[in-house]
Length: 141
Image: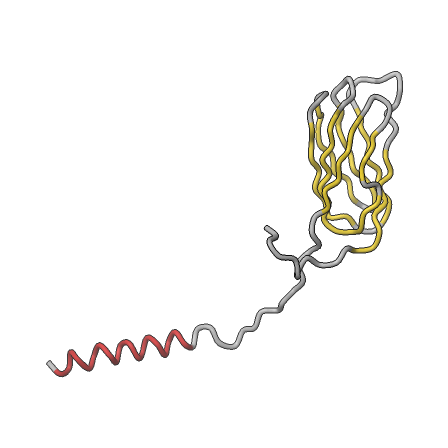
């Protein structure tokens, strides 16, 4: 009976020694998180595309745009090596584009499959210097 009583504690000690050796040595860098995404809103009318705000800092951007024009349109964001398109977006419907933008100038334009008599004026979005990290922000997803 003594061997049964000594085997259990020995197995526990051996298991604890093995587990203690598993996590040692590797350290994880505390890398900065990206900036908090900026929400931009926009509207397409029969004459122009408008985005607000028109100037943001570089980093993650979410563009929510509503089509208030008479016909369906595709929405294109292009500039600084980036091209992203969504659509066609039907009248009175919305769409969303998500991109991480670098400093520079971007064009947001609306297009359609059928030729229109009047061209919809594109919007120029200006992206400035990089926004600060969100590492010190609480309650972020």
